[in-house]
Image (cartoon, rainbow over all chains, first blue to last red):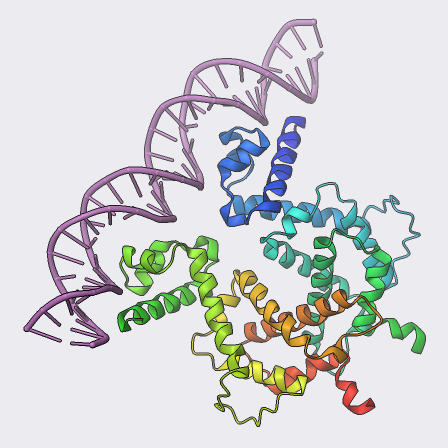
Length: 188
Length: 188
DNA sequence: TTTGATAACGAACAAAATGTTTGATATTAT
DNA sequence: ATAATATCAAACATTTTGTTCGTTATCAAA
């Protein structure tokens, strides 16, 4: 991909993100994006078919980055990243969200978080499936899994909307306490 | 309000709900609603300013019904409804959702559940605040409250999307187990 | 550093969706 | 029965979307 393309793509993403912080997705016109990004109309449509596509690609971009630490073991953070602990995994994930250059605030806050959340949950499902012992046995598996995923997504959303004040480690700990997982270390 | 107005209002709601079951909110045009509801264009706009307003009013209508059992003590369900137990409250709420004539499926399923969920959570917050003892003390209050509300909303959404197969009592029990509240009865 | 390829531009256009206005028709409340 | 008013349908103005195309600017590679 040409350097020019990357540049305008980023410009669009950033402009869109800025707009999302103050307006609902539905009330943002393509024209506004063009103005905010200083981009030609035809250029926009050569990149994205629709506004929905734009949002979708923005989400996948973010998550591809956030969940990519499995693959290319980038040691950008001071983790020894032996990925066996759920706590470590969540913390890691939060750090990735935090320093994600395209700030997530816009996508999530305001009003248009739905699509973002759906993507997020898809990733989280696969994550939790690697930790079968945190899925409680007393309730139907699907229900329990949905609970874990849903509440973590909600927690992260809350965290982001509160400007990520809590430390990733704190949030992970608090979350694990609430789902009754922190006790495991103590009781097992 | 005139009988005619009620009628068309309902027709619009139902048409919209039907459409929501198969298409995303954003991809539904006003024209489609008019066709589905057999309604004139100007009539629609005399009822609702925008499509968003329509959705919003539909949500408030539903919740006004679902959460109204506090006020007018309608004994439509076989509860003695002494409203002190959280379990009973949740069960009650689920029953109301279940037999809500305007079926909730459309509003929630498909893709446009976001607004619905936001309204829902607002109501749930006030509900949980009446049960301080289920808000865990080991974590920040706001975080804990967000967890309770978010995960209940997610659970209900899951329930509705799965065609409400689980019994309200079951769902309430399962949920309380997951948030570690069911134990209270045993331990207190 | 020149050159061939291509991305961005912007203006003009076509198409689609959103709202508004109108006067005629039908329904309701009293 | 009548006055009030909600619905209708069609025409209209407006906004937003998406496309086309010739020109200009930028990049990658020789």
